[in-house]
Image 1 (cartoon, rainbow, N blue to C red):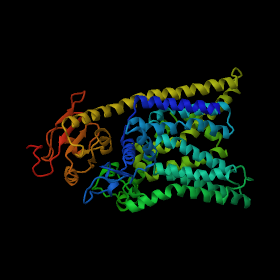
Image 2: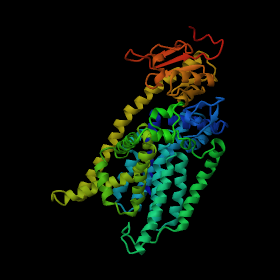
Image 3: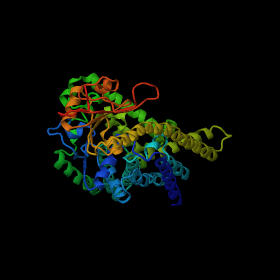
Image 4: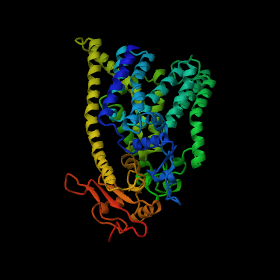
Length: 549
């Protein structure tokens, strides 16, 4: 177990360095999880004093429009749950939010080594794959963010491993896989796909036995295996419900649905991604079908292509792809990888048919990160298979030595890709972070009350940096945005050049309606164009003279 300990320390060190360089959340998902965790730690429960997207309040402008609102109508709470105790102990700091994810996420490296060993792989396979999980190429920059990457990376891999052990006769492992699938579903909505994959494995295993009894060719080469017991499947389902049952009851009690944004159609029946942040689009199955079959097929194809690109970059680090294909082909009948193949198929099907418009925004990356540990093992196997093939044809090659050189050479390339990719991404995050830090200081300098509400494109992010509540600017006409500002009594508008609702672009250029005043704070851009960030007073009540004429 010394190898496992070394791999854990390596993974922990990598994540600690990432946190040291960039400790804060960097994008809406991670801001949201931190904000909810801080609310829990402060004794305010599952509530937030901002609207990050109107799908959380029924995809409409509520009447009355109130804050705070119940949290987690769309994003699920596990990432916030694990942060809350650390925040209670250490205070509402970036380090407190990052720490649990670092500790949990580092488990993926020794877990990968253990999966490889259990599959009968050579020692070099487990060790190299463990290093690849500790430093997963282009995905490395995300694993220290205080959200779901750190959770799903080891959790999905462990679920697939235990499912495979169930195929090999370990009924208890199969049952526990249901528990882990429940935790994955408590982390993200698409965790239900993992539970579905486990169910498909059980059904396929039963079909194998049925076909064998009828004298037909079975799906597996191990026809004499006993099937996974029915009680193991019942146990898996029961443990899954043990995790998700209480949460679904909460969702039913608060929102009237176990999956509010799915049942309303806000997440599933989008025709364009702009409808996701709109209160006038009213997505529905009828409107979705009305766009016609060509448009529907085109959007599904775009989702698949984007998912393949995400997989190539963030799981295969591009350089691993040919070796992954070789390894996958060689191990296609191995029980240890059967659940991985099933879940890979289910994950791509989900990205193609269920949420294709969300894939370009990064939704599939969260799903795919859990595929990376097994993919790393198969990739190393593929490298050794390729080297073995060449060494048998080139007498000058010594197979074992050449395999070692090639394996660690490829690992070095993946590690280098992590370094190359991480730098620009973190610089981009910092370019967004610095204006927000400056805005927070300016709001305090101006004496803006802590309960003044902000209108912005990222209400959760500005809550994190300024401590002030707010509402998202919907992707709707300026008149609709004005109605949102009036309904929620927002006092300030924050616009960012890099990301703003389309109807507000003229405001940043100086063309303002009467209810928006002149900017009181701006951060100029390096190119001399529109400001990177600007703060405007919003006047929606009688007697507010801040907006002038």
